[in-house]
Image (tube, rainbow, N blue to C red):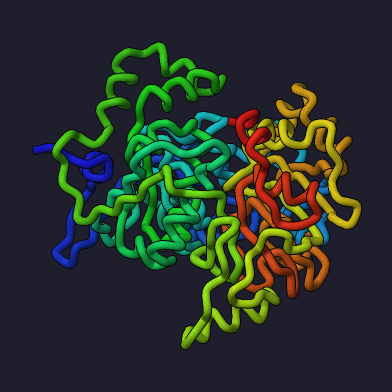
Amino acid sequence: MPRTLFEKLLDAHLVRRFDDGSALLLIDRIMMHERTGSLALQALQAAGRAVANPAHAFAVMDHIVSTQPGRGDDTSVPNGAAFVAAMREAATNAGIQLFDVTDATQGISHLVAVEQGIALPGLTLVCPDSHTCTLGALGMLAFGIGTTDCEHALATEALRINVPRTLRVVFDGALRPGVTAKDMILALIARYGTKGGSGFHVEFAGPAVTALDMAGRFTLCNMAVEFSAFAGAVSPDRVTLDYLRHKPEIAHWIDNDEVVSAWLNLATDAGAQFDHELRLDASRIRPQVTYGTSPQHSLALGERVPQPNDDADLRRALRYMDIRAGQTLDGLPIDAAYIGSCTNARIEDLRKVATLLKGRQVSPHVRAICVPGSTQTRLQAEREGLDRIFLASGFEWHEAGCGLCFYAGGDGFAPGARVISTTNRNFEGRQGPGVRTHLASPETVAESAVAGCIAGPDRTQLDEVS
């Protein structure tokens, strides 16, 4: 019978099914970061257990580390240096590979997993980070877990999950110039809500998805968790193979015909049945910006903020954001602009932003910061001269890390600041106490930084970027 990508991944890793609808799965790869991974490794050691397969477990310094240039172990996060030291010691004791603070391979775990050949089509991968679903763009089953589940996976190479239902989200038509994968996922969540994917494994499909490059597909899958999905994925195709071919740690697999055939055969079969399907017309999507404190509080530039009526959560969100119902976001002054996070800080994102920034200046009252998603991305951008464009325009150029995407007591923006950001979450205090975060694409963030207010790229610039 025709099968979906998810069904193929599940079947290939199934150890046992249970009567309650759960299943025990083989876990191929485990990623950890210093904020929670050291706790799992320490608990495992305290229980007298070893990591079952150290060659398939990896640790990354990304959440607590400073993003300031020239950083070391010191971080502004309370007790941050202790987290770094604990991760380093735990990884050494467990005999697993560590991507340390100053390593050329360091970065946000979801980018490192791709760059280092850890994430591959057809595999299962878990990490104590909800945005692990990013990696589903490669045609794999990748999902976030808790610290206790991480300990269990390290000890047994298996996890019990509640098997989700399947949902296909089809983007018909073609995107207009300047409309991005970030706009696609925000439009989806705005239409169906943050619970729209709850209980489902979501496969993104349709002509607008197959036309995306891998950076765009990673962005779609990254925010599947904001849709409350168990995980997100895109069926592997020639775009996937071409992308992997240019990754030094992975390229050798592309020369193996059997491997390539197996990867392409993971794609959902024609006629495969999903439990549910949603369809959107990609040609109708416009650049999106959020106005509230949830990704579902999103609208197209030029649209008016809706009336909250009896929606208490929306009333509170508008008070927090200091936004009025009925207003448009265009022209709303901003204090800061942020390019970064596991959602939109890949080399492709930085190239597009540099195209928009070249020869232009960030508004004098805006603090603009770029944090490449990995050290490899930063070094590649510097080889291409992108850093010089960012710096000349008035952007700060930082080291890779998660610090300015979420507030952990260290890096953050000024209290009450209004920030337009390429990140994935905009709840109260996400980027610092009282900070008001508007989610948007890298192109919209760049144009807003120059304008000093929320603004979309003009038509000429959009054509250049596209």
